Image 1 (tube, rainbow, N blue to C red):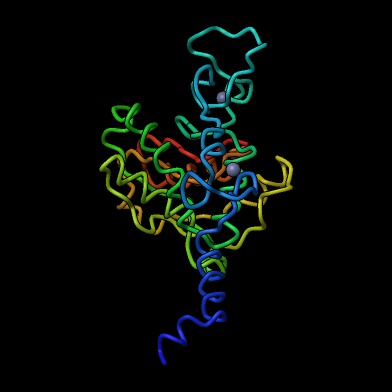
Image 2: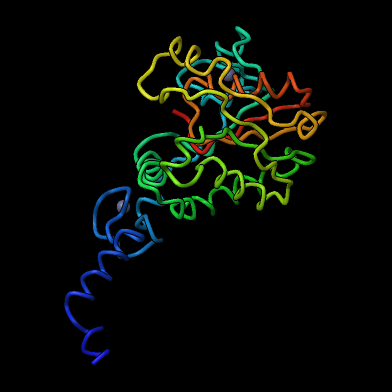
Length: 251
Ligand SMILES: [Zn+2]
Ligand SMILES: [Zn+2]
């Protein structure tokens, strides 16, 4: 009786639909049926993730325009020369385009924190190669507002920070900051609007947890840098040491 029930087409379909919503059969990157690769990406899309490499701005990590005549070392972009940023350095894993963009959207807006597992090997390669640069750093992250956290069910920057802290074997600061007011989504806003939107939006929960510490601040996407810049401001006000930013992607 139970067997007959389990074999019924209805249950099979429900099970397939559940599995498909957790591990989609179609690749998140290209939308095609996924025959090889991981749980979210096909092998080809995974190979297509563009990892940022030199030449880039020493300070903010902006990829240098290869047509532009820049010195090979010590290149600083226009924004950094204007003293735009408060953080000491920023780096990103890859460009926010095609595959990485789709994957970030999928895990951020479709409640799929597991999608981060597709990127973990890339993060591991990056932090293994740069391990010495982050020695003595504690890992923190840009928090979501409590209301958005409730809607989404997880904080994507926390998941990312947790993964990075594990790779680096570094301490993870749990809830180092909170959003003291809700901000509008930064997407589709220009630089000025983004600055205004995040101004005064964050506070350090307990200054003792960040005071005199070098902090690796993690977020998902770096667009104008307004958010991480504002978070850096409050971290430095709470007497943090160096603040270095790491984002999954750079728009
Ligand atoms: Zn694909
Ligand atoms: Zn720069």
